[in-house]
Length: 223
Image (cartoon, rainbow, N blue to C red; front, side, top):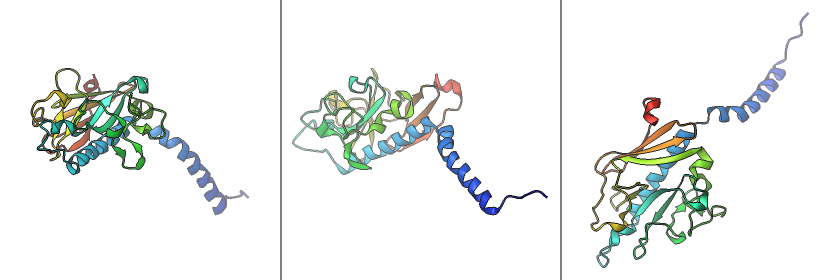
C-alpha cells in the first residue's frame, strides 16, 4: 500500500517553494526600464508640485523666473559619469544653472536625504544624504536619457523646468530674457536607454505638464 502525503507535509513543501520563489521571481520579472520610468514620472510630478507651491514671482527682481524648480539629468565626475538626475531650484541671485546643496529638493520619502545621487560641488555620491536611487545607471542599468521632440533645444537639452502654474519649459533658462521663453508647446519625449539597448519613453504634455510612460511600438524605435 502506497503511503500518501499528509496535508501538513504538503503545506510545508508549498511554504518552502514559496520562500525560494520569493528570491528568484523578482529577479526574473524585474523590468528595469519600467521601474526607472515610473520613478522618473513620479519625480517629474514632484518637481511640478514644488514649483506650484513655491511661487518664484518677485516684482523686485526681473530675473525671478530663473529660480524655478527643475529636474536636471546629468553625467558628472562625482558619479563617475553615470546617468543620474537632480531636482533643485536655481536660487534667484545665483541662477548658475547647476545645483548646490542649499538648492536641492528634499527626498519626500526620506527628508534626511536630498534629491541627488551626487553632484560635483553640491553633494558627495557617498554621502548618507544622497538618494542613491537617482543614479539610474547603478540602480536600473539606464545608460542614457535623451530629451527630444517638444523639449528639444539647440545643444543637448537635459532638463525640464516648471513655473508657478505647473507649465513645463525646456532647456536651461539662465540665458533667457523673458519669463515665458522656452515654454513647451508640443509633447516632450524623454527616452531612457538600457544597457541591453532596449528603451522606454516618458511623455510630458504641454501646458498641463502631465507625465506618463509609453512603451516603444517596436525595437527599431530604440535606435
